[in-house]
Length: 598
Image (cartoon, rainbow, N blue to C red; front, top):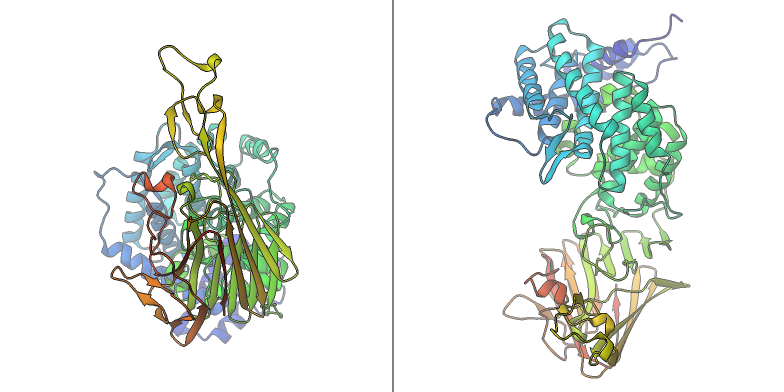
């Protein structure tokens, strides 16, 4: 057994590999890992992690001590600062190793955490009061920090370790008894319990985890969790990895593998995530894949899957990797030494593909540097609420730096808003999206439903546009109008032929809206006084850097481009219009228009 190395010794030796300018990488690798039974270390990455972590500590110290009189409702910045400082004070090659100044700051931060912690072990988080799941998110930082402190065992930090234990054990009671809001909260709480149990073992923590796991972890055949969220899928993956590692449940990694594979196809060439199919707030957000770095790195090392290796390296080459990832991740590498190993060599990964996620009705097509997304999977009826998919963007198109952020279609038909397909059908290289909208009128109430005081129930109209005290559900509909929209998209080696057909009552305004990335240069279209472009005829072109996208031909029969969003938005003066360069093609029903994007 003499070749075995304790976890604490491994971390300390791992720190010595970061001697940087003092010792060459080659010497470090040979001095500390001459025993072939020991895993290799990604020396350059570990060196960068330490340097960036120390820079973050310096920045935090320059800000001065926290004003303890100010009430706090967002504890993640505090928890992040605690992990960063803990990493440096515990790392033998950090300039802040055993720093009394850092120790003082850590003690003060933990005093604030303990002061703000409620007797039931919870913290507040914005509008969520005494929130078990939000406390679990904080434990994602605090528990690994406590683990590293416990391994280092600096005598001067005994009091600090006691504060960590008090906070964590108190929070553990909230994790054992508290509830959740959303699907991902179950696994965040369970991961927190796994972390607590690894530090201060107690059977009650594991029993509570098993209660949550007994519900089952939903993942569909496409590799999506129920929320289909680019934000929360990464959260769940991290939680499942923690449970798999700490509870000896390797089967949980099979679920992670499915989801991370799906998000390979949801990643644009520049690292942006496709979120059109999300059921959470990120369906309207611009986010990138950098938040998945630890998940992809761990699974790449653990499985050797070339897709995961590619994704980890892609993230390492993103412009914000240093600021968004390196500056706050050292402690997690110290706590989980498997992350310190070099990534496997990258095998061939296919970047020319067509992937149809049939359950969420989303297609991803990649042809070299051209990337296309088609979406027709909103939850019906469309409702603007967290937990349901309602994104009106049915197409995005990218060619290098030239980016069509989205294409939408809206009509003035009863002001029911944007086109939202009732699913998507694939026929060869053609994708067909169809939507049927209905607008109603109402007949007088039958005698049996009449009230002498006319005090009828406040209820929604059957098309969901408005509410009133009219007993809509008891009325016969009449004068029913139906509008059917069909959009057929045919892909040929990265070029799209799009066929629009809108049929129903005549003289309904139809608007095709294209939004290009901010800063795009548009030619071939006419610009109005508000900065909107109209493609009257012929082809238009977007240019960004050295890349271009051509689109058209155009048609403009009206210029009414306001109130495209439906009464659900416009009644409150709201809008789904985003920043960007907007180009419009318009007409009236019966509407039939063909165009190409290439």
